[in-house]
Length: 450
Image 1 (cartoon, helix red, strand yellow):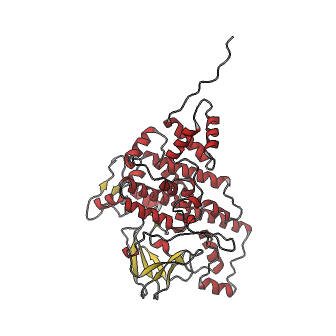
Image 2: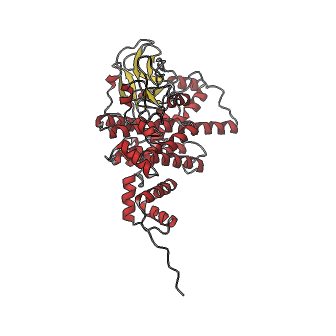
Image 3: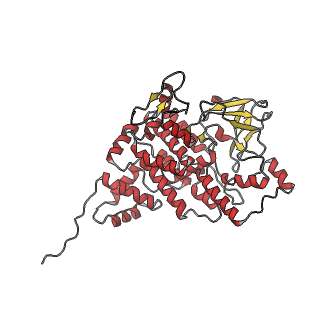
Protein backbone atom coordinates (compact mmCIF):
# COMPACT_ATOMS: atom_id res chain seq x y z
CA UNK A 1 0.00 0.00 0.00
CA UNK A 2 1.48 3.34 -1.08
CA UNK A 3 1.80 6.16 1.41
CA UNK A 4 -0.05 9.41 0.60
CA UNK A 5 2.31 12.05 -0.71
CA UNK A 6 2.33 15.72 0.22
CA UNK A 7 0.82 18.14 -2.27
CA UNK A 8 3.33 19.32 -4.85
CA UNK A 9 4.90 22.67 -4.02
CA UNK A 10 4.58 25.34 -6.71
CA UNK A 11 6.31 28.68 -7.18
CA UNK A 12 3.59 31.19 -8.13
CA UNK A 13 4.22 33.72 -10.87
CA UNK A 14 4.28 37.41 -9.93
CA UNK A 15 0.88 37.88 -11.59
CA UNK A 16 -0.56 35.33 -9.16
CA UNK A 17 1.55 36.28 -6.15
CA UNK A 18 1.10 40.06 -6.12
CA UNK A 19 -2.74 40.19 -5.76
CA UNK A 20 -2.54 37.81 -2.78
CA UNK A 21 0.23 39.89 -1.20
CA UNK A 22 -1.82 43.01 -1.71
CA UNK A 23 -4.76 41.50 0.17
CA UNK A 24 -2.53 40.30 3.00
CA UNK A 25 -0.85 43.70 3.29
CA UNK A 26 -4.25 45.41 3.47
CA UNK A 27 -5.29 43.03 6.25
CA UNK A 28 -1.96 43.34 8.12
CA UNK A 29 -0.46 46.75 7.28
CA UNK A 30 2.04 46.84 10.15
CA UNK A 31 3.73 43.41 9.97
CA UNK A 32 7.23 42.90 8.58
CA UNK A 33 8.32 40.77 5.65
CA UNK A 34 9.01 37.63 7.72
CA UNK A 35 5.57 37.72 9.34
CA UNK A 36 3.92 38.48 6.01
CA UNK A 37 5.68 35.47 4.47
CA UNK A 38 4.33 33.27 7.26
CA UNK A 39 0.81 34.58 6.63
CA UNK A 40 1.25 33.99 2.90
CA UNK A 41 2.38 30.37 3.27
CA UNK A 42 -0.39 29.71 5.78
CA UNK A 43 -3.02 30.98 3.37
CA UNK A 44 -1.38 29.22 0.38
CA UNK A 45 0.11 25.98 1.77
CA UNK A 46 1.06 24.61 -1.67
CA UNK A 47 3.20 27.63 -2.56
CA UNK A 48 6.93 27.95 -2.15
CA UNK A 49 8.20 31.53 -1.89
CA UNK A 50 11.56 32.54 -0.46
CA UNK A 51 11.88 35.50 1.89
CA UNK A 52 14.42 37.05 -0.49
CA UNK A 53 11.93 36.95 -3.37
CA UNK A 54 9.15 38.23 -1.15
CA UNK A 55 11.20 41.24 -0.06
CA UNK A 56 12.05 42.10 -3.68
CA UNK A 57 8.39 41.93 -4.71
CA UNK A 58 7.29 43.99 -1.71
CA UNK A 59 9.85 46.68 -2.46
CA UNK A 60 9.10 46.75 -6.19
CA UNK A 61 5.34 46.96 -5.68
CA UNK A 62 5.47 49.45 -2.80
CA UNK A 63 3.96 46.90 -0.41
CA UNK A 64 6.78 46.81 2.11
CA UNK A 65 6.40 47.78 5.73
CA UNK A 66 6.00 51.58 5.51
CA UNK A 67 8.41 53.67 7.57
CA UNK A 68 7.00 55.59 10.48
CA UNK A 69 5.77 59.09 9.74
CA UNK A 70 8.83 60.67 11.30
CA UNK A 71 11.04 58.74 8.86
CA UNK A 72 9.23 59.71 5.68
CA UNK A 73 11.36 62.01 3.57
CA UNK A 74 9.56 65.30 3.28
CA UNK A 75 7.07 64.34 5.96
CA UNK A 76 5.94 67.30 8.02
CA UNK A 77 6.78 65.31 11.14
CA UNK A 78 10.39 65.06 9.98
CA UNK A 79 10.85 68.80 10.25
CA UNK A 80 8.84 69.83 13.29
CA UNK A 81 7.77 68.47 16.60
CA UNK A 82 3.98 68.36 16.75
CA UNK A 83 3.41 68.78 20.45
CA UNK A 84 3.99 71.62 22.85
CA UNK A 85 5.36 71.56 26.37
CA UNK A 86 1.93 70.58 27.72
CA UNK A 87 1.88 67.41 25.66
CA UNK A 88 -1.02 68.61 23.47
CA UNK A 89 -0.55 67.48 19.88
CA UNK A 90 -1.00 69.99 17.08
CA UNK A 91 -1.00 69.74 13.29
CA UNK A 92 2.46 70.54 11.94
CA UNK A 93 3.68 72.11 8.72
CA UNK A 94 6.86 73.33 7.09
CA UNK A 95 7.87 76.15 4.80
CA UNK A 96 7.68 75.44 1.08
CA UNK A 97 11.12 76.27 -0.41
CA UNK A 98 9.73 76.19 -3.96
CA UNK A 99 6.76 78.50 -3.39
CA UNK A 100 6.91 81.56 -5.65
CA UNK A 101 4.37 83.82 -4.00
CA UNK A 102 4.94 86.46 -6.69
CA UNK A 103 2.93 84.28 -9.08
CA UNK A 104 -0.19 85.38 -7.24
CA UNK A 105 0.45 88.58 -5.30
CA UNK A 106 3.05 91.08 -4.13
CA UNK A 107 0.86 92.24 -1.27
CA UNK A 108 1.74 89.37 1.10
CA UNK A 109 4.65 87.22 2.22
CA UNK A 110 4.98 83.92 4.08
CA UNK A 111 5.93 84.03 7.77
CA UNK A 112 6.79 81.18 10.16
CA UNK A 113 4.91 81.75 13.45
CA UNK A 114 6.49 78.83 15.32
CA UNK A 115 5.63 75.25 16.22
CA UNK A 116 2.05 75.57 17.40
CA UNK A 117 0.75 77.97 14.75
CA UNK A 118 3.03 77.11 11.85
CA UNK A 119 3.26 79.26 8.77
CA UNK A 120 0.93 82.04 7.64
CA UNK A 121 0.66 85.12 5.43
CA UNK A 122 1.28 88.75 6.43
CA UNK A 123 0.60 91.91 4.43
CA UNK A 124 3.62 93.64 2.87
CA UNK A 125 1.81 96.88 2.00
CA UNK A 126 -1.45 98.67 2.87
CA UNK A 127 -4.51 96.83 1.56
CA UNK A 128 -7.86 98.55 1.16
CA UNK A 129 -11.24 97.17 2.16
CA UNK A 130 -12.77 94.96 -0.59
CA UNK A 131 -9.46 94.92 -2.47
CA UNK A 132 -8.79 91.79 -4.52
CA UNK A 133 -5.43 90.44 -3.34
CA UNK A 134 -5.13 87.44 -5.67
CA UNK A 135 -6.94 84.77 -7.64
CA UNK A 136 -5.95 81.13 -7.46
CA UNK A 137 -6.75 77.83 -9.16
CA UNK A 138 -6.34 74.56 -7.20
CA UNK A 139 -3.58 72.05 -7.79
CA UNK A 140 -6.22 69.38 -7.29
CA UNK A 141 -9.91 69.43 -6.51
CA UNK A 142 -12.73 67.10 -5.60
CA UNK A 143 -15.74 69.08 -6.87
CA UNK A 144 -19.25 68.73 -5.51
CA UNK A 145 -20.86 65.48 -6.56
CA UNK A 146 -23.35 67.08 -8.94
CA UNK A 147 -20.50 68.87 -10.73
CA UNK A 148 -18.60 65.59 -11.01
CA UNK A 149 -21.70 64.04 -12.55
CA UNK A 150 -21.81 66.88 -15.09
CA UNK A 151 -18.14 66.24 -15.93
CA UNK A 152 -18.94 62.57 -16.51
CA UNK A 153 -21.78 63.55 -18.86
CA UNK A 154 -19.52 65.96 -20.79
CA UNK A 155 -21.52 68.93 -19.51
CA UNK A 156 -18.47 70.42 -17.73
CA UNK A 157 -14.76 70.43 -18.59
CA UNK A 158 -12.90 67.47 -17.08
CA UNK A 159 -10.07 69.85 -16.11
CA UNK A 160 -11.35 73.33 -15.16
CA UNK A 161 -15.10 72.48 -14.71
CA UNK A 162 -16.16 75.21 -17.18
CA UNK A 163 -19.66 74.60 -18.53
CA UNK A 164 -19.72 72.84 -21.92
CA UNK A 165 -19.99 73.55 -24.70
CA UNK A 166 -17.77 76.63 -24.28
CA UNK A 167 -18.86 79.63 -26.37
CA UNK A 168 -15.44 79.98 -28.05
CA UNK A 169 -14.70 76.41 -29.11
CA UNK A 170 -16.32 72.98 -29.37
CA UNK A 171 -15.45 70.51 -26.60
CA UNK A 172 -12.54 68.12 -27.12
CA UNK A 173 -13.55 64.56 -26.19
CA UNK A 174 -11.52 62.09 -24.15
CA UNK A 175 -9.31 59.92 -26.41
CA UNK A 176 -11.35 56.93 -25.20
CA UNK A 177 -14.62 58.42 -26.52
CA UNK A 178 -17.34 57.31 -26.97
CA UNK A 179 -16.70 54.74 -24.23
CA UNK A 180 -15.69 57.64 -21.95
CA UNK A 181 -17.92 60.72 -22.25
CA UNK A 182 -15.60 63.21 -20.50
CA UNK A 183 -14.52 66.27 -22.51
CA UNK A 184 -12.29 69.35 -22.26
CA UNK A 185 -13.33 72.92 -23.02
CA UNK A 186 -10.25 73.56 -25.19
CA UNK A 187 -6.91 72.08 -26.16
CA UNK A 188 -5.04 74.08 -23.50
CA UNK A 189 -7.12 72.48 -20.75
CA UNK A 190 -6.47 69.05 -22.22
CA UNK A 191 -2.69 69.71 -22.27
CA UNK A 192 -2.71 71.11 -18.73
CA UNK A 193 -4.57 68.04 -17.53
CA UNK A 194 -1.76 65.81 -18.78
CA UNK A 195 -2.42 62.21 -17.80
CA UNK A 196 -4.61 63.07 -14.80
CA UNK A 197 -7.84 62.20 -16.59
CA UNK A 198 -6.25 59.14 -18.18
CA UNK A 199 -5.45 57.79 -14.70
CA UNK A 200 -9.06 58.38 -13.64
CA UNK A 201 -10.65 57.29 -16.93
CA UNK A 202 -12.72 54.07 -16.68
CA UNK A 203 -11.50 53.01 -20.13
CA UNK A 204 -7.84 54.04 -20.08
CA UNK A 205 -7.31 52.91 -16.45
CA UNK A 206 -10.12 50.55 -15.42
CA UNK A 207 -8.24 49.75 -12.20
CA UNK A 208 -9.38 53.17 -10.92
CA UNK A 209 -13.10 52.30 -11.14
CA UNK A 210 -13.43 50.65 -7.69
CA UNK A 211 -11.63 53.59 -6.03
CA UNK A 212 -13.77 56.25 -7.71
CA UNK A 213 -16.97 54.31 -7.01
CA UNK A 214 -15.92 54.02 -3.35
CA UNK A 215 -15.24 57.78 -3.11
CA UNK A 216 -18.68 58.59 -4.54
CA UNK A 217 -20.46 56.03 -2.37
CA UNK A 218 -18.82 57.37 0.80
CA UNK A 219 -19.05 61.02 -0.31
CA UNK A 220 -15.41 61.27 0.84
CA UNK A 221 -13.99 64.56 -0.42
CA UNK A 222 -10.62 64.25 1.30
CA UNK A 223 -9.99 60.91 -0.40
CA UNK A 224 -11.23 62.33 -3.71
CA UNK A 225 -8.86 65.29 -3.50
CA UNK A 226 -5.91 63.11 -2.43
CA UNK A 227 -6.65 60.74 -5.33
CA UNK A 228 -6.52 63.61 -7.82
CA UNK A 229 -3.39 65.07 -6.26
CA UNK A 230 -1.64 61.69 -6.51
CA UNK A 231 -2.83 61.40 -10.12
CA UNK A 232 -1.38 64.86 -10.86
CA UNK A 233 2.05 63.94 -9.49
CA UNK A 234 2.06 60.58 -11.29
CA UNK A 235 1.09 62.40 -14.48
CA UNK A 236 3.94 64.89 -14.09
CA UNK A 237 6.36 62.00 -13.52
CA UNK A 238 5.13 60.15 -16.60
CA UNK A 239 5.47 63.30 -18.73
CA UNK A 240 9.03 63.98 -17.54
CA UNK A 241 7.92 67.26 -15.93
CA UNK A 242 10.54 67.11 -13.18
CA UNK A 243 10.27 70.73 -12.00
CA UNK A 244 6.48 70.66 -11.92
CA UNK A 245 6.54 67.36 -10.02
CA UNK A 246 8.93 68.78 -7.42
CA UNK A 247 6.68 71.83 -7.03
CA UNK A 248 3.69 69.55 -6.38
CA UNK A 249 5.63 67.33 -3.97
CA UNK A 250 6.87 70.28 -1.93
CA UNK A 251 3.32 71.60 -1.80
CA UNK A 252 2.16 68.28 -0.34
CA UNK A 253 5.07 68.07 2.10
CA UNK A 254 4.57 71.63 3.34
CA UNK A 255 0.85 71.32 4.13
CA UNK A 256 -0.28 71.35 7.73
CA UNK A 257 -1.29 67.86 8.74
CA UNK A 258 -1.60 65.21 11.40
CA UNK A 259 -1.48 61.45 10.99
CA UNK A 260 -4.70 59.46 11.08
CA UNK A 261 -3.61 57.66 14.25
CA UNK A 262 -2.70 60.86 16.11
CA UNK A 263 -5.95 62.51 15.08
CA UNK A 264 -7.98 59.59 16.42
CA UNK A 265 -6.18 59.90 19.76
CA UNK A 266 -7.65 63.39 20.13
CA UNK A 267 -11.21 62.10 19.76
CA UNK A 268 -12.55 60.83 23.08
CA UNK A 269 -13.57 57.19 23.08
CA UNK A 270 -11.94 56.34 19.76
CA UNK A 271 -8.75 54.42 19.13
CA UNK A 272 -6.70 53.92 15.96
CA UNK A 273 -7.54 50.21 16.16
CA UNK A 274 -11.33 50.66 16.23
CA UNK A 275 -12.76 48.20 13.72
CA UNK A 276 -14.79 50.69 11.68
CA UNK A 277 -12.00 53.23 11.22
CA UNK A 278 -9.41 50.55 10.45
CA UNK A 279 -11.68 48.83 7.92
CA UNK A 280 -12.29 52.16 6.17
CA UNK A 281 -8.56 52.87 6.21
CA UNK A 282 -7.50 49.50 4.86
CA UNK A 283 -10.06 49.48 2.07
CA UNK A 284 -9.36 53.03 0.88
CA UNK A 285 -5.58 52.50 0.91
CA UNK A 286 -5.87 49.17 -0.92
CA UNK A 287 -8.06 50.75 -3.61
CA UNK A 288 -5.63 53.64 -4.11
CA UNK A 289 -2.68 51.25 -4.53
CA UNK A 290 -4.75 49.10 -6.86
CA UNK A 291 -5.68 52.10 -9.01
CA UNK A 292 -2.23 53.66 -9.39
CA UNK A 293 0.39 51.02 -8.58
CA UNK A 294 -0.66 47.36 -8.57
CA UNK A 295 -3.86 46.58 -10.52
CA UNK A 296 -5.14 43.06 -9.81
CA UNK A 297 -5.48 41.96 -13.44
CA UNK A 298 -2.78 41.65 -16.09
CA UNK A 299 -4.81 43.61 -18.67
CA UNK A 300 -5.24 46.45 -16.16
CA UNK A 301 -1.52 46.41 -15.38
CA UNK A 302 -0.71 46.84 -19.07
CA UNK A 303 -3.10 49.77 -19.42
CA UNK A 304 -1.67 51.52 -16.36
CA UNK A 305 1.89 50.94 -17.63
CA UNK A 306 0.87 52.50 -20.95
CA UNK A 307 -0.10 55.70 -19.10
CA UNK A 308 2.75 55.87 -16.59
CA UNK A 309 5.56 54.52 -18.76
CA UNK A 310 8.38 52.24 -17.68
CA UNK A 311 10.33 54.74 -15.55
CA UNK A 312 9.90 53.69 -11.90
CA UNK A 313 8.59 56.14 -9.35
CA UNK A 314 11.30 57.21 -6.84
CA UNK A 315 10.91 55.43 -3.51
CA UNK A 316 10.57 58.67 -1.54
CA UNK A 317 7.63 59.64 -3.75
CA UNK A 318 6.06 56.21 -3.23
CA UNK A 319 6.48 56.75 0.52
CA UNK A 320 4.85 60.19 0.43
CA UNK A 321 1.90 59.22 -1.77
CA UNK A 322 1.14 55.51 -1.64
CA UNK A 323 2.62 54.00 1.52
CA UNK A 324 0.37 53.29 4.50
CA UNK A 325 1.73 56.22 6.53
CA UNK A 326 2.01 58.59 3.58
CA UNK A 327 -1.58 57.86 2.55
CA UNK A 328 -3.02 58.60 5.98
CA UNK A 329 -0.90 61.69 6.41
CA UNK A 330 -2.16 62.84 3.00
CA UNK A 331 -5.78 62.28 4.02
CA UNK A 332 -5.19 64.35 7.14
CA UNK A 333 -3.63 67.13 5.08
CA UNK A 334 -6.59 67.20 2.69
CA UNK A 335 -9.07 67.30 5.58
CA UNK A 336 -7.25 70.23 7.20
CA UNK A 337 -6.55 72.25 4.06
CA UNK A 338 -9.38 71.75 1.55
CA UNK A 339 -11.37 74.86 0.72
CA UNK A 340 -15.13 74.43 1.12
CA UNK A 341 -15.62 73.64 -2.59
CA UNK A 342 -13.09 70.79 -2.39
CA UNK A 343 -9.91 72.40 -3.77
CA UNK A 344 -6.32 72.23 -2.50
CA UNK A 345 -4.49 75.53 -3.15
CA UNK A 346 -0.80 76.39 -2.84
CA UNK A 347 -1.20 79.90 -1.37
CA UNK A 348 -4.67 79.68 0.16
CA UNK A 349 -3.42 76.80 2.34
CA UNK A 350 -1.23 79.31 4.22
CA UNK A 351 -4.22 81.29 5.56
CA UNK A 352 -4.76 80.76 9.29
CA UNK A 353 -8.01 81.07 11.23
CA UNK A 354 -9.44 83.91 13.25
CA UNK A 355 -12.99 84.35 14.55
CA UNK A 356 -12.54 88.04 13.57
CA UNK A 357 -11.22 87.57 10.00
CA UNK A 358 -9.82 90.39 7.87
CA UNK A 359 -9.84 88.30 4.67
CA UNK A 360 -12.48 86.29 2.82
CA UNK A 361 -12.39 83.57 0.16
CA UNK A 362 -14.91 84.06 -2.64
CA UNK A 363 -15.94 82.27 -5.81
CA UNK A 364 -16.46 85.20 -8.18
CA UNK A 365 -15.98 83.42 -11.51
CA UNK A 366 -19.34 81.83 -12.41
CA UNK A 367 -17.83 79.74 -15.19
CA UNK A 368 -14.92 78.15 -13.28
CA UNK A 369 -16.18 77.06 -9.86
CA UNK A 370 -12.82 76.01 -8.31
CA UNK A 371 -11.17 79.40 -8.97
CA UNK A 372 -11.06 81.45 -5.77
CA UNK A 373 -10.61 85.17 -5.16
CA UNK A 374 -8.98 86.39 -1.93
CA UNK A 375 -10.56 89.70 -0.89
CA UNK A 376 -9.89 92.04 2.05
CA UNK A 377 -12.87 92.32 4.41
CA UNK A 378 -11.45 95.55 5.87
CA UNK A 379 -8.36 97.73 5.57
CA UNK A 380 -5.19 95.79 6.44
CA UNK A 381 -1.91 97.33 7.57
CA UNK A 382 1.60 96.14 6.55
CA UNK A 383 2.82 93.38 8.90
CA UNK A 384 -0.73 92.34 9.83
CA UNK A 385 -1.54 88.66 9.35
CA UNK A 386 -4.10 87.71 6.70
CA UNK A 387 -6.68 85.48 8.39
CA UNK A 388 -9.94 83.83 7.38
CA UNK A 389 -12.74 82.20 9.39
CA UNK A 390 -12.82 78.39 9.32
CA UNK A 391 -16.21 78.44 11.09
CA UNK A 392 -19.17 80.83 11.31
CA UNK A 393 -17.94 83.85 13.36
CA UNK A 394 -21.54 84.56 14.40
CA UNK A 395 -21.63 81.45 16.62
CA UNK A 396 -20.97 81.73 20.34
CA UNK A 397 -17.43 81.18 21.57
CA UNK A 398 -18.10 77.64 22.84
CA UNK A 399 -19.88 76.61 19.65
CA UNK A 400 -17.07 78.05 17.53
CA UNK A 401 -14.42 76.18 19.48
CA UNK A 402 -16.35 72.90 19.23
CA UNK A 403 -16.57 73.38 15.48
CA UNK A 404 -12.86 74.24 15.33
CA UNK A 405 -11.91 71.03 17.17
CA UNK A 406 -11.59 69.10 13.89
CA UNK A 407 -8.52 71.19 12.96
CA UNK A 408 -6.74 69.95 16.08
CA UNK A 409 -5.02 73.20 17.09
CA UNK A 410 -6.60 73.40 20.52
CA UNK A 411 -8.60 76.26 21.98
CA UNK A 412 -8.76 79.29 19.67
CA UNK A 413 -6.65 82.17 21.00
CA UNK A 414 -7.85 84.92 18.66
CA UNK A 415 -8.69 88.26 20.28
CA UNK A 416 -12.43 87.69 19.87
CA UNK A 417 -12.36 84.32 21.67
CA UNK A 418 -10.10 85.58 24.46
CA UNK A 419 -12.39 88.56 25.09
CA UNK A 420 -15.61 86.50 25.01
CA UNK A 421 -14.20 83.82 27.32
CA UNK A 422 -13.10 86.52 29.77
CA UNK A 423 -16.65 87.90 29.72
CA UNK A 424 -18.12 84.50 30.59
CA UNK A 425 -18.70 83.16 27.09
CA UNK A 426 -22.08 81.96 25.88
CA UNK A 427 -24.52 79.46 27.35
CA UNK A 428 -24.20 76.77 24.68
CA UNK A 429 -21.84 74.59 26.72
CA UNK A 430 -24.47 72.44 28.46
CA UNK A 431 -25.19 69.43 26.31
CA UNK A 432 -26.68 66.02 26.75
CA UNK A 433 -24.50 62.94 26.35
CA UNK A 434 -26.37 62.10 23.14
CA UNK A 435 -25.56 65.50 21.62
CA UNK A 436 -21.91 65.15 22.62
CA UNK A 437 -21.80 61.71 20.99
CA UNK A 438 -23.34 63.13 17.82
CA UNK A 439 -20.75 65.92 17.81
CA UNK A 440 -17.99 63.35 18.19
CA UNK A 441 -19.23 61.33 15.24
CA UNK A 442 -19.56 64.50 13.17
CA UNK A 443 -16.04 65.54 14.14
CA UNK A 444 -14.58 62.22 13.00
CA UNK A 445 -16.43 62.35 9.68
CA UNK A 446 -15.32 65.96 9.18
CA UNK A 447 -11.72 64.96 9.83
CA UNK A 448 -11.98 62.13 7.33
CA UNK A 449 -13.50 64.55 4.82
CA UNK A 450 -16.60 62.41 4.35
